[in-house]
Image 1 (tube, rainbow, N blue to C red):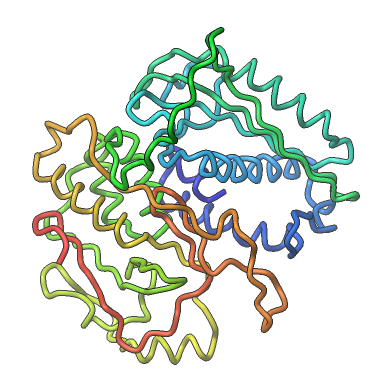
Image 2: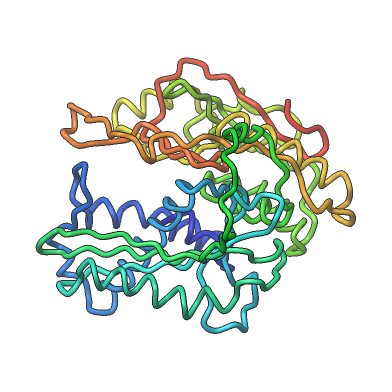
Length: 379
């Protein structure tokens, strides 16, 4: 839900607070468990808020579906044309359409007593015909729309019956049967991505991570806002969880860390806290929980590419840059039960573009750190 909300054109502070509010909302409105179930308190929502909440959940489910289908990069579909009405919600790239174009995705969510399997299936088809199909073959900033999906998700609050249906563009097949061929080799770990789509995706990602200085540089490259100060730096702390290494923005952890994690250049004034004080604070109050981070390989690759784009002055932006696609983790696997809290959790939710949600930061005595600088890259 946070990933889809932050694709909108709105002030950064508003998007960041709105995105974080989603976690509080779903933790209260969804029942804990391995299966999707709504809290009885859903009925306390106002008549206008209930469908709005269902719509936001539907958008989040759509993003999970598109990740499951292999798509890594995303943007709001208003990039197609803000004057087109109706149109789908999102643009996705990568996966099966890498190097060929992009796909449209329409999201629908419904929480009502009238939700049935047939009704949700009908909504998926109806919205595909109305908001996706008319735009197949159109072009946008990120490329030609060559395929489309309509994802409908619904749940009955009382019976807890939950349904998911997907309508998509039909793929024409030739009359002759093609001879069997060997399975294609796995896709390369680093693939070319349309620069505009990569910037849109990672603007949302680094906004969620709290790395606002990187967001400022991305906005400048996209033609919004003035050129940031070259002395702006973005510090990260490196953590290891579930066998993977992640970069966590230090901006999101302030004021709990000491300035030794920051270089002299462009730093300060930082709060005079020690990392040990941060661990003491954590033992006393718990948390921080649900921290957005970036898988290390994805973070390095994008930030090095970003430095290259900035070094070019923003005038000659290449049509594509090469970025890794990370295999999802925790999104489509069996959940893990936390015996201390008695609830089911994922320690990490990893998306294909590199963004991850860490259920909690591991204990760290003196963590490794990295700093991104627009002039010097990563050090």
